[in-house]
Amino acid sequence: MTSISEAGVVAAVDKELFIGGKWVPAANGKTFPVLDPSTGEALCEVADASPADGVSALDAAVAAQADWANVAPRERGEILRRAYELLVKRADELALLMTLEMGKPLAESKGEITYAAEFFRWFAEEAVRIDGGYAVAPNGTGRFLVTKQPVGPSLLITPWNFPMAMGTRKIGPAVAAGCTMVIKPAAQTPLSMLALAAILAEAGLPEGVLNVLTTSDSGGVMEPLIRDGRARKLSFTGSTGVGRKLLEQCADKVLRTSMELGGNAPFLVFEDADLDAAIEGAMTAKMRNIGEACTAANRFYVQRGIVGEFSRRLTERMEALPMGRGTEEGVVVGPLIDEAAVEKVSGLVSDAVDRGARVLTGGSTVDGPGNFYQATVLTDVPKEAKLASEEIFGPVAPITPFDSEDEAIAAANDTEFGLVSYVYTSDLKRALRVSERLEAGMIGLNQGLVSNPAAPFGGIKQSGLGREGGTVGIDEFLETKYIAVAL
Image 1 (cartoon, rainbow, N blue to C red):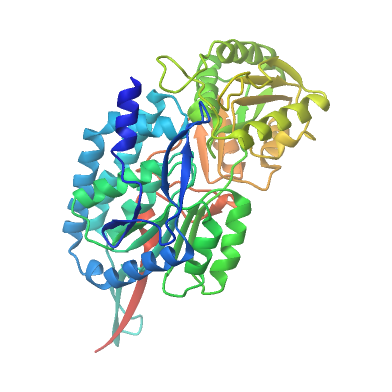
Image 2 (cartoon, rainbow, N blue to C red):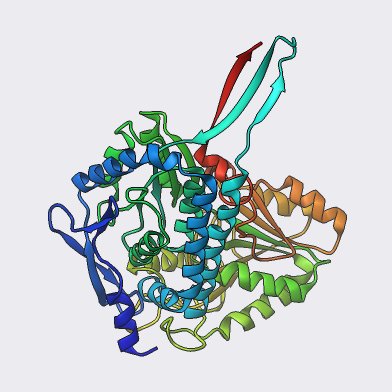
């Protein structure tokens, strides 16, 4: 891509707040920069919302709720369907925009646009499948009528690592259910959400149904809205630490919440596994999105008889990955999101090495501009290392050997997190036995990718509450009402 086309896709995005169907500047006139993580240079400036802007956005969502709830399900679904088609049509430009603000390689950005669009297609179909029930009371003297209605105005907070897909995964079910929204994208990657808002408006979403706040002060803008009392739902994707704070705030008004929080995914490889498949799965689970994913394999546990061969082959694959700016052809390892991310990954690797881990490849930052860290493989990683308990969010694969099935399961479950676990084995009985014992909301059984719009996504323990996607995803935005009928 040329610099002209890069400048063009950035210039095409509205940089103001989207409130009540209109693009408006921040009330205080402030803006903040959006940086290219591969260079550290500013791409543009976007409106920096204040708490007053947050109230205006919630006002718009509340004002639009009653009319939006009464829109026919088929019509809501058709809006999502049109938005899906626009996303597919503009995938190339949207992918370039995402790569510029987030850093991931262009091929991965294109994959995310496809993934993001599928949430709109899926929930376009779910909009007309909201159902209820009718039953005879056990004593026969009355009837039970059960119906589902939209929760109401919803607050949505999305992360920077999947700036488009995490938006569509929340907006899709909210639109299908008949909820209005105020959404706040991450400050690092606001452009994808602003582009998505324009697409939804073009697809026919009524004014006030979706309101977008870009801000450098997430807590200052969103906490008043959580405590306002008019919003009835919060959906958040981000760190467990922030999730805990938001839950405390939601308790004040007893907001309905769904949260997809941190992960610490174990990747278990047994001696009877197909080693070729395990290596491919490891590369997918570790290096998708440069390792900056809550589903990324964080801890590799490999049975002792094959740990040497697995380590050697994984090292060869990681060493061969081209690194560079995400717009460059063939690049697989792009920059991390910011300097803080590089410092965290570097600190975790240094801690592991200090405790006895060996570096098989990588293990250091890269000189020059941008937030680059080498693709890294560590072996003999002790359980005391910080990266055994903290989410890495970078291209680092720590390998630890194990001897028995019970030992592997105990190590995998030894974490406060429970989002996803990966298991590689050719033994069907072991596959089922281990999958049932692992404490995770999702299991990748002989595959390194679990995310799918048609499947329920979410974790247990401190990895979150509720599910997104699948047939249950829309339930997070619906209330069940029971009507007792006397005969």
